Length: 74
Image (cartoon, rainbow, N blue to C red; front, side, top):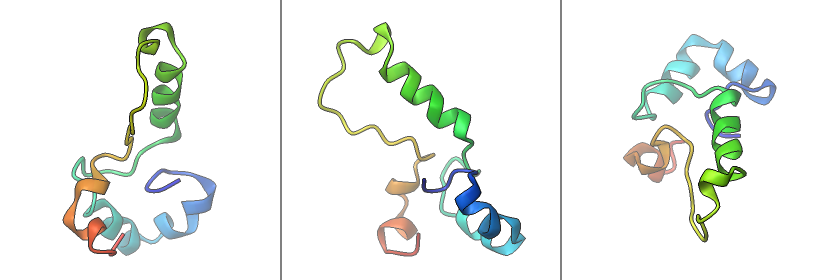
């Protein structure tokens, strides 16, 4: 799930140093919540997105655009 607060990441994000390291790679500056991803999915499934086709939509706080992530640090 990437940098999202989920059970799979609980141990890593419980360590303040590891959490801060991940947050330092996210331009938005914080680890996302499942509700934020759910909101994106709900929008994509909604009438408002009915004309959306063939896109890659990153819901990652900008992490994939950050040089540290691209260099393999993330």
